[in-house]
Length: 420
Ligand SMILES: NC(=O)c1ccc[n+]([C@@H]2O[C@H](COP(=O)([O-])OP(=O)(O)OC[C@H]3O[C@@H](n4cnc5c(N)ncnc54)[C@H](O)[C@@H]3O)[C@@H](O)[C@H]2O)c1
Image (cartoon, protein in one colour):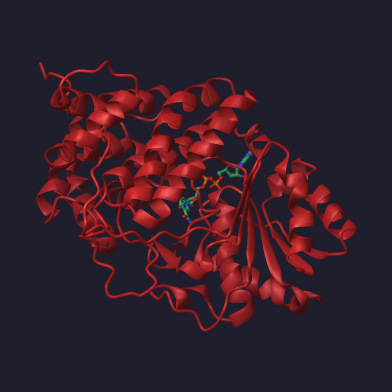
């Protein structure tokens, strides 16, 4: 879809300063760190990588060969919490050599990268991570970071946020600011070859959600940045939609094969590009109802981030037909739907998306997800409570749409499928 240029367009786009994507790219990390004149690394990972692979040992050895010191923290966990971050900070600060740490290397999925980002703040400023929630202004520069993702999905290696679980409030909180974007993203598709199918599906559907949700989100011209001169997210623009379109096509092309044939490096590479391009879009444009409602759904079910997004995505797409018909028709074409009139195509976009979600083992409606009907109102309420996402929903005000999305997602109703 070509959008004619208009005189009132606005574009604000933020990325990390360096991105390297190549099979075997992990072998270039030490030389890249040395080229920055960094001296002492903190490697943040989990016990899968330190115990069951040689990646961490090889990294430590290659850093030493370049003359760099390193410390390893391998206590990363899925969905890291503020409590984990604070106890890791305390443990690390007590280690000999902690004062020499001048950069952080994250190795793992979105969870380890988010923990590493949070440590970039808590180590130099020695404050609980919760004290950085709700502000994009930090007391000074966080430690610089190199992120090496091992899943293709979250895009955290280029985004401005760290998402952490807060056990005390049973919610996820975001530590956010452009200064938290990793300085370098090193994306090595070979690292994703060992992802089990469920991790591949969760992460890949997260990437598809980022791409579609940011392709359909509020325009930059309407986006409320709250007067922030350096906003993390500022609505969709010409550059974000370009990346989003490419990412959607890559997901429909490569995700099924990466899931069914895990050792296919070509499919893994396709998904590495999909994840990166999806993040290039959403990490400036921002997200809206899918993520807002998915956070609430995760609070209720404790299901994974990718699966909660995927369960809601088709229903949010369907609800956006009044304002995003041409974009949805475009998505249907990318998913392989034969050309027809744009209204029929738009209806098929969510149908095709749901078929992919189901193929990857995620339940297609909220009832199948195990959500009781009595919880639906609470889900709507909690989704709307994530106001930074609700205010970016392109059809304002969002209340009636959120309620309809949740009802239809519960019943599995899509307009492109005739109900009996
Ligand atoms: N900061 C952001 O911008 C952002 C964006 C989206 C999601 N997230 C967060 O990312 C998290 C989800 O990340 P994820 O989907 O990458 O999964 P994950 O990091 O939670 O990892 C899931 C599991 O897969 C394992 N794993 C990871 N890579 C593997 C590999 N190559 N081989 C074998 N096992 C592997 C991990 O050890 C872990 O047990 C959530 O907490 C979510 O909130 C953050």
